[in-house]
Image (cartoon, rainbow, N blue to C red; front, side):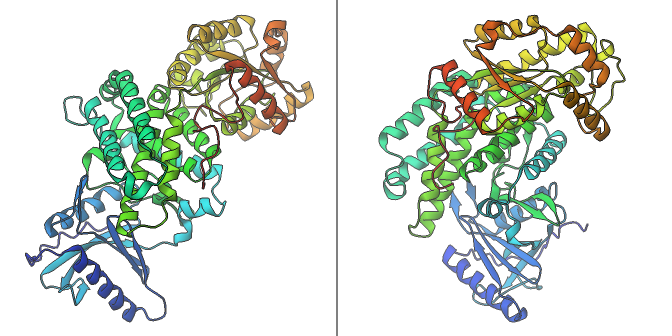
Length: 558
């Protein structure tokens, strides 16, 4: 790939107004249309950009605006930031970002390229079909679990390689993390009368501010610890559904934040929260839960769940603010997006009451598959014994240990360490207000008792998800899984034989907290029973989840 062109052409020294720039874009569009008469030139506009698409190319120009979080007011700065946009976005979308090209001529008669004085600059990109954008796929009902799984894997790899913020630097400290949240609240308050209708009343705004102040007081040391532990990195910064697309059959993330370091550098959980929040806003809570769980399991950063809710609120307010800015530039219009994001933020501010769920059953009984269905349906974070056991011993989830039943990674000592690790990882997730599913056999009464004592120490109730299947079904499933070799579990017929000899049945007291699940798996009836069991556990109506879902219902307009 060729390096970006610096274009050291002489600049005019004449700064364009936004009105002049808009007229210039009109002229560029007309010029492109004259070149490409067989197809219409497409034009898109955001609160900070103009984009023209023609002939397999997209040209993105930065609006000549100065806002509280960016400065595109001067040509020199727009040019510099075009170069920066090219550099940064080639990290995740190298095939899309081609070059920076000058706009020459005059604003009345401009052209892309040329040798004359530069009056503006544009990022040249490879165009791709807009129907592949995730927000459009979501609207068509075409976004599925495999998509978010692929994005989670890509994002985790990106974060592992991203630059890490130094603890002595200016970014990532608690006060700096908080400032954008306060700025957004202030901006929304200033716009309330003009744009937000009944959504952001003075009382609602006061409630948001009160929640934020209390949460920040509790989380300030956690933010500092996250910085010192290396979780503040140079990420993407704007990971909503409109910045993800399917290109050539591959999940592609583009259009990162180049104009504000404080927005681009942040906690990796804040980036995960952005995409999860926007999945909720588009009426896809199950995919949001799946995405969060995949990211936390893949990274092992379950401690990050402690700050997840704060970032969900922050990201919802970011999108609400963007919607306000866009409505203002359009001189009014539909404020549904503003209200939808504000409703999400307000819902996440409500005090959560999480529950600890533990699975129970032999290998092959469907625990992991069932836990996946439960976490997507009600909102929870799953912590898998098969994954955490291998992580403890430095193995990847699909690595084979070669351990015999009851030995090696599956010795009594290793198993005890694994179950202790499950509880340790559950602690910050529960503290963050999210349901937890501990996905393990829990065939020992002592293991179940330890989980019960742990939950009680946190003031959390427990529910047991007990999976049952006949021996023939268990053996068939184990054989199929071993043949596929695509799961963390190493259980086989020998393991199952050992389990059946040593398992201790649920007590009468435990059965009172149990949701039985047969070989048919988790269906609507099971979920109804589980929701009732959760309601009894926390003493509230659990018609919908409280963990990652806001407001107790699907967001309006999603």
